[in-house]
Image (cartoon, rainbow, N blue to C red; front, side, top):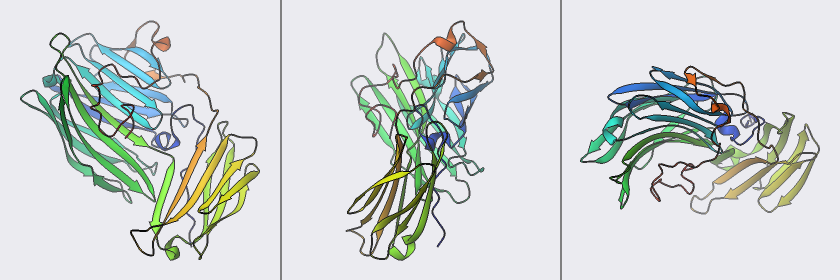
Length: 341
């Protein structure tokens, strides 16, 4: 049986390997009755390495670090922000009114690093002051499955939100793209925001019979300093999982009734492999492989390239955290921190 290969792992600061694997993404945003193309490139560590706007217009970079780039426009009072942090990569725009964000847009990315991009088209609308978002068409790359999510529409005391989503799946890996529009009802500080967010975790989930899942599997990854790691394990005919060997570092294993944890000596990296029998689907099992590593620390910003002017001190400005001042309390669908699905 062919081995199941995990996504190659790269040394990270605070962006997951699943996000770094994409290499970035490109989106066109409806903005002020026209469109703005935002091209984002990530380096192998998931840091922002290049961000280009087309047309450049009057935009200038006022924040520029490894995980966040913010552009302000001298005309129209708009702002564009790109963030690569944790399990997400996002492109967002802020404006004074919802009408400034109404129109069609596009998105594309090499979601699983296969060399072939997936893409979609979407539309933002204004229904009597309440935003609408529709994903019009989705074109997944070969071997990738696209599943539409449930549309979200919420109105609360301080504003309203609309969101549409699609999940991309391949070989047990899943990433979710969410397009959301939020509007504030504050008459003194009116604002609207559009955000396109791709989320992905370093976790593989496969479901099938023991005959389908059984046999020898391999996993490959890297520590924070780039040292290559490898793991070989077996799914046995009796429904158990057995550790076989490790490469790159000596592995210490701890077995439990559903699988094992392999910790790589001299690192703070480990892999959790577990096989569970599905109660609702007789005769089927779920195999989960989860990678985690700690102590990578913050990395300094690379030599980022933007095709706009850069305001003095921009490379020192801002933070690479998840705070978004335009977030409307409790309105981000399925999220605890406004960033993750």
